[in-house]
Amino acid sequence: MRPTMPVSPTRALTSLAAAAALVALTACSSATADEPASEEEPVDAAGNGVEGVEIATVVGDGIDVHAEPGGEEVLHTLASPNDFGVERAFLVERNEGEWLQVLLPVRPNGSTGWVRSDEVWLTSTEYRVEVDTGDFAFTVFDGDEEVRTGVIGTGEGETPTPEGRYYFTELLQPPDPEGPYGVYAFGLSGFSETLETFAGGPGQLAVHGTNDEDALGREISHGCVRVSNEDITWMAENLPIGTPVEISG
Image (cartoon, rainbow, N blue to C red):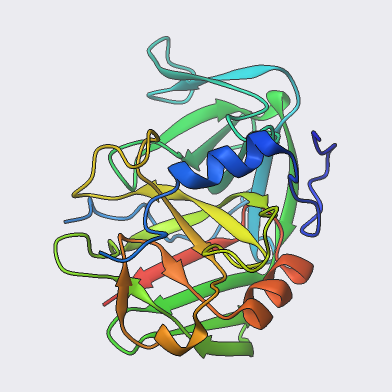
């Protein structure tokens, strides 16, 4: 099932293809980030501050990502929908009117590039998620208001959860809600920094539920962030694709 724009936070993939794709996300069984992009307040074409952050969703079947606004060098050409069948979306780091600097779902973590504003559809959110791997906790903010907190499981040993600034790229609904991914899984724009591949996939990070909530509060994964099924359900019902996620130690 391919979601239509805008991407609803409650829409999820339920096909067998989605189930297979879930396996490729890093960190669902037990066993140094680049500098994050600028956190300057987003601005509109007139230079005025906007509420929250902007999310850019591609309106065509692909988009060129440029090295500079107005420049000819193309860093990436990214298809839409993405590999999970979801419309390609970016977290906007800076709005220069005709050009947007966006955080990219590519290696290395924290990569940015520029896209034309007439090739995307802009929405905004005041939600953000802060993940503290040292305290094994997450906090969701709506603006300055703390609206939800919970316990997490993180990467272990040689597969730690990498610090950095990311965003939700897709929402998947595993076919088996009692499986290791729990009831929902959000893909992140970042990747493991110690695993180039995982289960046939690129080592993409995720925030997902779990079938072993007693294991939360410690290092248990290959890099993904695990939360309770109750917490991931709340996130799925409230947080849109594009929501920023800050991971710190």
